[in-house]
View 1 (spheres, helix red, strand yellow):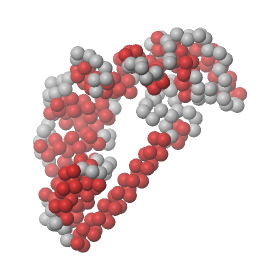
View 2 (cartoon, rainbow, N blue to C red):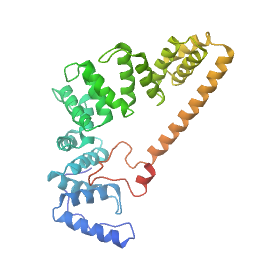
View 3 (cartoon, rainbow, N blue to C red):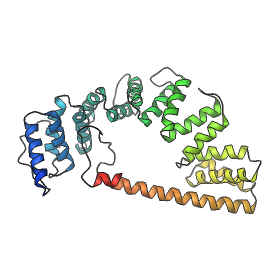
View 4 (cartoon, rainbow, N blue to C red):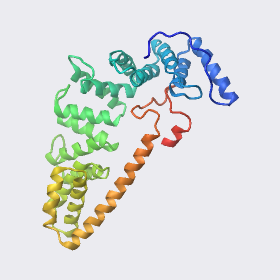
Amino acid sequence: MLTPVLSRAQEPEITVSSKAYKRQFKTMLQRAEEGDANAQNSVGGAFAMGDGVVEDDEAAYRWLRKAAEQGHAAAQYNLFLLSTQKRDSENTLEAPVKWLQRAANQGVLQAQFRLAEFYRQSRVKHKKRRERAAMYYAMAAKQGHASAQFYLGWCYDKGVGVTQNESKAARWYLKAAKKGQVDAQVNLAVNYIDGRGVQKSQAQARRWFLRAAQQNSAIAQYNLGKLSQARASSRGNIIEAYVWTSLAAEQGLGAAIRERELLRSLISPSQLSRAQARVRRWSKINSDNAQFDLQLESRRSFPVTEPISGLEALLPKKGKADSQR
């Protein structure tokens, strides 16, 4: 179990043979011992990840805390990551979240989003947790975080922590949708169907449902099937309706399963054969993409974290970073 006060670390065991690296690390360690916060964060990160030295959680905690106490934003966020991932199961989030809060207030994007998530999910108790969730989503959204933009749109859509405003909701959904955020694409499409915060447009609804459906969103696929069915005056549209509905049904969406049976009674045998061939092609593409995503995830050092970029921070081990690109 990690403790906030630890004795001075012993001479670190460097695991790389490069003399240049050894000199560089020893210089960094000396700077850290002299109180340089950037160096303390880098040394802490090296110990946390076992990057060139033997992995040592206690040494990592000690150096990251030294930097964090000096107000180093990246170290504060990294200390939160280390504390939550390595902590004893009986510990609570209370202490680590204090570091997360400090990093968020200094503008660390990932800290802002994660703190907003904690408030939204009630993992951090506060009498105004909804307002705080919306506030931190807004901070991250303004820095361009796609999921934060979606959730800020959702807050305005539902009136969670902010005054309900359909136009603002649609604007934030659009920002996130353009970045490929699937939930934002789906919600924006629904807004175009209903004319909520935007002018009604079947064409725009179809456009955003299609983008989400191509990312394997079952809800988008089902809705795209319904739109195609509504316009199914030609052979192409009834086939398209079946394809998208079937793809959603294959993911277990109940409404799509029922709708697929209805479409089978409307489609000719030759059309059904063509549609099923398209479904098989899409299913293989989706399966290949899913396998690729799993392979990437399995190579991540910290699967559930998002290390800070642009700052001296916890970095993946050498070789793993390249494999993720």
